[in-house]
Image 1 (cartoon, helix red, strand yellow):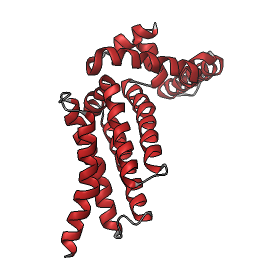
Image 2 (cartoon, one colour):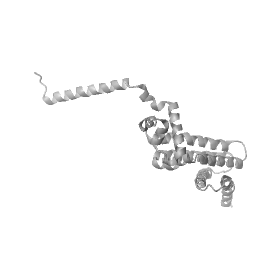
Image 3 (tube, helix red, strand yellow):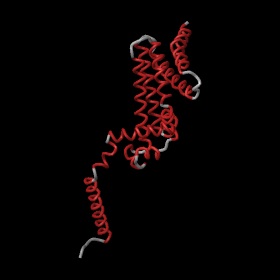
Image 4 (cartoon, helix red, strand yellow):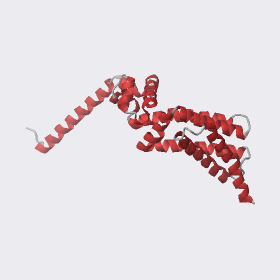
Length: 233
């Protein structure tokens, strides 16, 4: 007959049961299908899902639903989320996909050879063209995704600040502005101004794009330097 007290035997039985359960979990992890772990890492499948999301958003705009995106891709919502983690993950993937392309295009125009006025005009022109040609997608990212998801709002803000810093460094390098603090203030002000004016223009399609572009270029290259000279006089 055992000398163990009943409570000791209960503890030992519980430990054995726990160890057996842990062993089963370990075995299940070791034998799990590779497909479950690679769902998110399949770049071709991920790209196809993002393209399906693009098509739905271009058709339906900010009201596009996750169910519609999943149906467009021929899968269920749980499988859609499996590739991106959750709705926030899908938002972030879409934002990265499109903001990177837009920023690279704008940057290329501003850094190409030519006068500052020509480069400023080309940069603003390509920005306005991009957001108007992809209006529903732009509004989905800027209005819905940014409003629903703090991570998206933060990511978009980071992109805008990064472009503002680049513009400030270009102005300093080319001698357009001599004071570093002023260059950074102007860089952020210009990027914010173009973005806000672009949003206004999207709601006023009767205004010609060239009118918006030239007005912004005049303000950036004439108005701001004139204001700086007034401060120095």
